[in-house]
Length: 311
Image 1 (cartoon, rainbow, N blue to C red):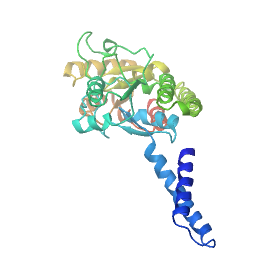
Image 2: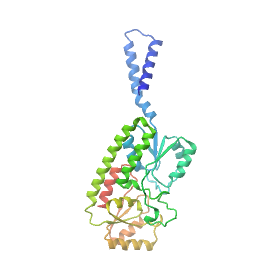
Image 3: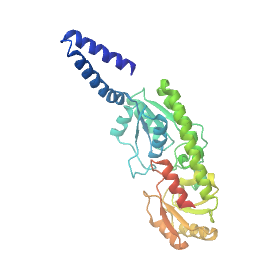
Image 4: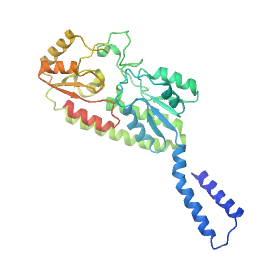
């Protein structure tokens, strides 16, 4: 900003020397140029902001909270898309290659994407928001060990944003990555990180109060997105999906029997999945089906919705 003000003043000085005007009009010219320059400053500052790409919408809220107005945040996954089957287009890859930073979270599509994007732009910075987080392996949520898992990245189950405890770790990683990108703004990033973590902790406290009195702690889910969430709040999940695919009739019957024995009264599914398997289990239980998307950008709102569904 100081450099821009200096440049503005030099330009004003040059204009005054090159085009001398009567003393009575010089204040008007000066203020006109000054006002014009000040009006242009926000646009120039906006144009200079680095572009930061994230993979999925739940990352956006956190990065925006920490970046403030120091970066422009864009997301790769389109609304309504399934992150486990999503494949970036060539156009999207080129767009990411033009960015300053890509923040990953462990989705299966990220590694080939990073390789292609850095092939186009070797200077593209890449940082992991999931750094230091020990993830559950595929075998821990009904996928055969050693077999490819369509819902997991190569490092395990990526749904870490559904745990406030792990989301707070993501905040620390995000602030560190942004500080590497813009070292002069480190203090601001760290202050906003602390504020974001405080809000995350407040959401966590609200969730604990809402869920501690739940009469039944077992739920049926179509996809195991909510595993970390369940771990945080002492819940048990029965998963309809088999090896990342639609379940066989025998498996549906078995899940229904287990759910009935546990007293489960709620079946959860997500917008991008076929609702019929969830409806079949719900019919066995005489239970209701709840559709909730774990991919919402507004993370606090997502957690409040989860509290209302799980309690």
